[in-house]
Amino acid sequence: MNEALVVFVRSLIAFASLLIFTRMLGKQQLSQLTFFDYVLGITIGSIAATVSTDLSSPAWPHWVGLFTWAAIVAIMQWSSIHWKLADRFLSGEPVVVIMKGKILEQNMKTVHYTISDLLEHLRDKSVFDLSQVEFAVLETSGTLSVLLKPEHQTPTRKDLNITPPQGGISTEVIYSGLVMEENLKRAGVNQKWLMKQLKAQGISSPDQVFLATYNSQSGVLFVDKYQDK
Amino acid sequence: MRKLLYYSIVVVILTVCLLVMNADSYLSTGRTDTENVVLHLSALKTSLDNAQWESAHQHYQALDTAWQIIKPRIQFSVEKDQMDAIDSGLARLAAYIRWQDKVGAAVELSEIESHWDNLRR
Image 1 (cartoon, chains in turn yellow, green):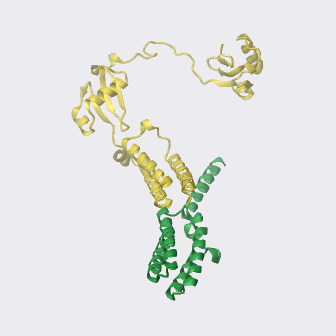
Image 2: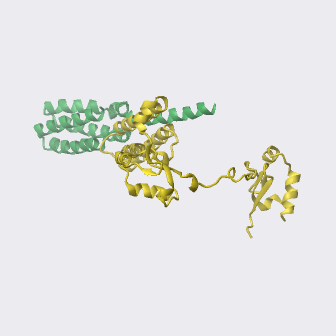
């Protein structure tokens, strides 16, 4: 038995299976995972490692285990989406830990959330004074959502009656010295206009440009040359 | 069209994985007499029962050759310990045949048969 070759082939199987299963299970970010999701991920990863390197037993039973765990997670996700009660049971519910400026100790006790956890999460949200907090909710993912008292909230442009500048998305018009004709057309400009703009910035040819983007709403042309000096 | 291609790739990859992991039953069945482990096991058993040591030695050689052919084929889907157990069993069986120990050889052969059956389960 060529053990290295067997581990190589079994690793390919484990990798391909894990990739397919995780792609099927969706795109939740690590920060959005609940503690249970996190543990599930570790378990599935551990089974995949066994498929890959545990030669003391055939790959098949471990693969069945991997498939079963992935299928259970898929069923859980499906029921959470289609059945509100299941979602509440499987993911839990957000817990209010501060209401109208008062800490709700009983709620904190039920979710094993300590005062140091609360203070740490508040600091993470740039809140260093508990008296500024009106509401704080501990989400199912373990993150803390905070609503400050009105007098401590940052004023918005609307509050200050300031008209925001135009936003919009910029489009690549030159990439690695190549002019993107299609993008120019979509942005409502042409190559002649682009050359004029480049000349105004002291650039004689698109070859000198690494990246140029154009925002048609704000009318800003951003140019980055190969030569940065 | 792209979705169909995506699903086809997934199905092909999973099918190949399943085949590699479950091909042991098919691959361990010898296509010729030279690689037929079951055939040589049974012939060796008959020789041992009749205490025909010359014939037993020949069948042992054939059994060992068949096992060495089958081994690399099934290594991806079976337990390493079972393969090692068959290797050790064959080594002990060779010694029993050499010293013409009928009981010892029968015990080893029976154990090899058991490991062989477990391997293909």
